[in-house]
Image (cartoon, rainbow, N blue to C red):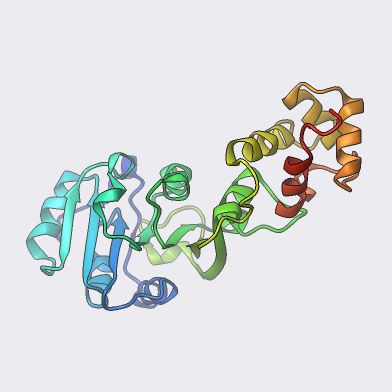
Length: 261
């Protein structure tokens, strides 16, 4: 293990800080009977913490050298799978599994999308992410983005401690932050079509900083006059911008889509 070095191409930044490892486990609210999926276990420092607290850890590691090393020295309740997490079949895991991971920055968006949109999603995901990304996920109206809308559409979001870059080997250029995404037990808006919801959201954010009358008109190919009437019915100012809207505002727009357009 002492000869192993981080692979820059795989975005490896190894974490050894015990306090942060414990915080990740605590925010995941682990129970003895849990099965946890860990993404990119690296040297296994987090894996060992997890294994001491739960029934089983399934750790997916892309780096074949690291996967081989981990398999030789970790507890028997840890299953190492060498492969790409983006190709992993989540349905292999027991129902109500959890995810705990120090996520490589370069695939953060892909992993988040995988977990949110999967037909077999985790009950809860506690992730260590780039601080800016974690803050964007938890943003409130005024600073919203498509990422924030998507994450909050599917999950209840809670921010945890900030983790300074100096606690990693090698240190990344920015600080990180723990975030927990708890899957909603019921859909946030059970009365809307998810594809239509995000089609409208994408149109709204399609032209950054533009007023909604313009971005929705261009994105959905509707006249500005029709969009203004639509926004009026939804009690939203035509001059508003997408980042100012709450999820409830988007819900109202989706419900009224097609009315008088």
